Image (cartoon, rainbow, N blue to C red):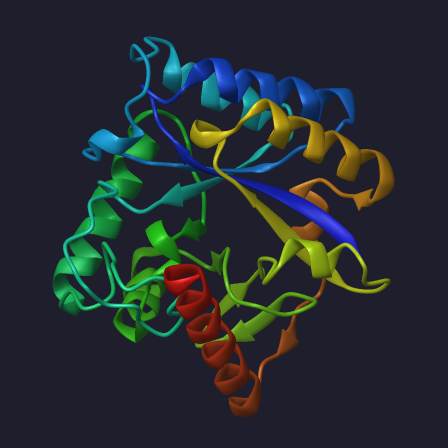
Length: 242
């Protein structure tokens, strides 16, 4: 299986020591990831360090080097107890919020990124939580792609292209065909995690996220969405109670 890398929760005051350690590992193996940048972070849980003054210039430089940028929500604040159509979690910044409010947040976040010279049509939902109003608002706001869902290749649904993440990384590593995304939160990385990823990078067929975006999407049918919803629900239950 060909594996791309996604980094969540990129913000000015994240744990830069851990992030840079992982970035060095990516550079060692020439892997260009997807990074989810929070336009205007208000989540204190993401603040682990002194805010980096050159944050936006840093993001633009990584983008020039081939890293792909996604808009990661707007404020990264969970106001809803909803799982939406991909219920990996039962809390959300978007799922359950009225359409007009979702559209306002998406457009506000996009304008912030644009104001810093960063343009993207790729969205990353905080907590993986979104509903059908989110998808509608994304289209209206000019987004065309979303990093989430389950499956072995990109798929089309409701006017957007979805790039699936791994349901369980250990299982994905055993498969021979298809594509998936490894989700990494650098704020919580341990030394053991770094060694685990180093081993994976040595043994697996890793690809840059830009390569993943070039893969032709298939059309997802109703049965596929039902299967995806059940998998997400099952994973949520397992993580919550085990």
